[in-house]
Image (cartoon, rainbow, N blue to C red; front, side, top):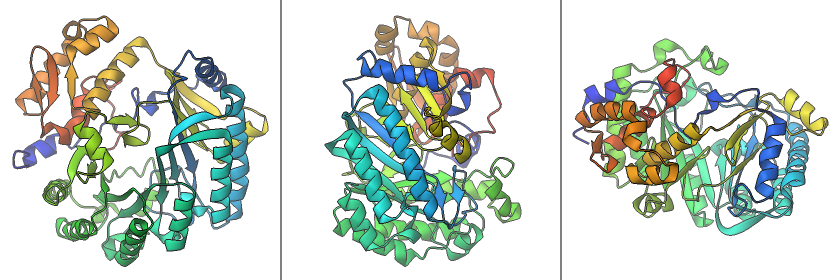
Length: 460
């Protein structure tokens, strides 16, 4: 950690993709629609595209009872609980359309409920949702079945219900324990409430508990965030996600309620990040990559040590690279060599399903160059290591010739101590792991031709 200087942190305090996919979602096109997606589903069912691999499912629940000012997610703020019952009917319609193409009983090894606030749904609605999914898909034992939880919406009884439904992983949105910061972002949740829920989750046998934190929020200072980190370390969740707040009020309307003068300075953000890295690693957490940490015995840390780490739209995963069926408004999925995204508004989503059509409105069919660069980027993001020969054999190219421009950029990163290059491979250094997005960006062909990166969050 002592090698990471403030100058280096400042140098990489720039926007860049998170690479949950390559190409990134902002490169999707309207020319790719429901017919293209249906064809990809048919190809999977026919056995030509990865039928033997299990599926991953993502279900987007967009509803929230109150607005968090920092939020950049696709959500619907409402107190009308009946809306989720209606939404559940449309999720059932969407699943039925998928089953027409895939057939029933497809194996599933990973499920994630995200939002919005999945726990906006009532217990009965969550039971109906899981029953409907299990009737159509085959959930394998030992899979990763996770749900995002707003601590303000659950108690121990609700956590017990989630365990009963088969969820084995929880992710609590915390962001910051400081009361003043919570008030400034309109998300007040006492630390004691979170502590009680985490303790309850452990009693109930959940395999992994994750806490989400954000630095760079209004009224945060390095000292106040130190106190939050101290509380988090004493709580000792299995995983921690530490995100940098990106203030983009021109893109995300809720952020207009945050006063720019209340935001910490760039230098304070760098200090917060530096202290966070020191605090979490000193507490025994393994740095997984980007903004994720895990205890050494957590399956994510084990997967990293064993070179089995994968990455998809849900972030880092221990599950093998697999197709992702995305359900719900605005959800993004992947089948074979295609990416797809559902309609972003509830009105359009509902209208398409009422017409009996899959609600996909944009996406991308990947080119050979896209696939090749994706394999390079994912190797760097997940293993931090790339053998040229592996790419040469897989794609019948000469790596150094094909990527000659990229190799010259990597030499600059080597001079900064972020990578090590030799005749056979690229190795991300321990220090380079903290800037792995910047390393991956070297191979992003779209960024090479488009230098406008304001759409992305900052690397640190």
